Length: 450
Image 1 (cartoon, one colour):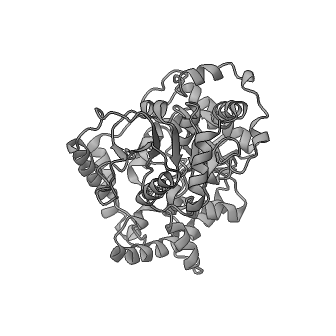
Image 2 (cartoon, rainbow, N blue to C red):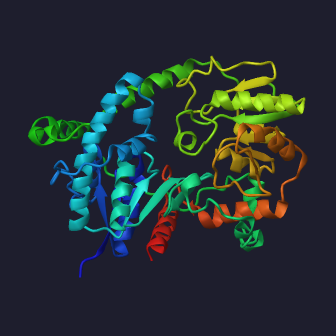
Image 3 (cartoon, rainbow, N blue to C red):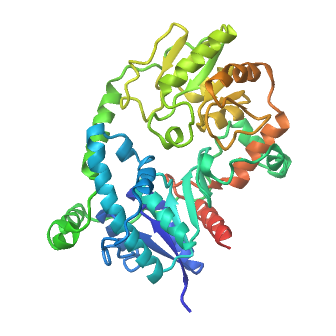
């Protein structure tokens, strides 16, 4: 009798120190982990750490599909992939052509591998990029469950969900009664969690580092496709080059270092806090019906405060990922708007009168601080009596007025935070992997399969 398998799909090198121990633990419990990785470096690290024979050979059977996927489907997958929507308009057509060709190869190969090595489940990270969305499509076509991984909403937590992440997860659409089922008194650490503003310490012992390849060996393996496998790779359409990605990250790091600090700016006595989100994030592209840019959000909030005649100022904090990467110099400036970059988020939340966000996790942090929240997009925490939602620009002023004049339901707030932190999220960190974090993740995976 063969063991049941699970696939770990296209995890980059920074995730491996957590997922390799996770895979070992799954293997001990009778669930064989098989890796589906594209990049040479990840495959080499996996081989050095005991998984040389558990890697899906996606190059074998890499043939063009006689029935390529509909172009509309490929366009849908590309709509949330940053490689595509961040590219200049002139390059998009070229990128689209590459991905159309890639999809015709990828789908046929994955279907072949599913028949040969059928998985019990497939683990993917985020699943808003093109390759991940294509994998999810094939799995659902074959009736194979997919478990979506993403960073949790609090430090040292992970989101693992069978439906999706954030607004696309199984958490979305729940009623207040669903969040009230588990009273906070049932969790002994909940009030410590509130006291420490959501920042509980990391649990468990740190895991030892992985075996990593010697730089010369890594270089030789990286050059292999250009020589010994040149004929094979010439048939595989290349969609992206990580070298240019790393160059761009280096440029951004230098640019951020040259920007002037805003840490000494004095916060107003009364203000509405507007945390910007990553301008091209999938949270905005896929789950924001009417706010499409951060500049548009700021203008709408300024208009709403003018309509209400509020004396409060607006404090804007740029997202750390966009600092130096996106220029907000063209966004309308006003004396009533305070711009921040590197200011401590906890200090802002402690003093804010209200928080307005599209669907950021900052909205959940604001609830930890007991602050009223207005959401402008699709968020799983759009729960009545917990937050106020503006479904269009006309709803923003009434929602803001209600948030400033109505108190949050304290019982619902505590029950929501308790259930979210201690029941829905997994207590684990891929950045700082521990034995306890791996054990918690394994238990969640097996419970979803079982």
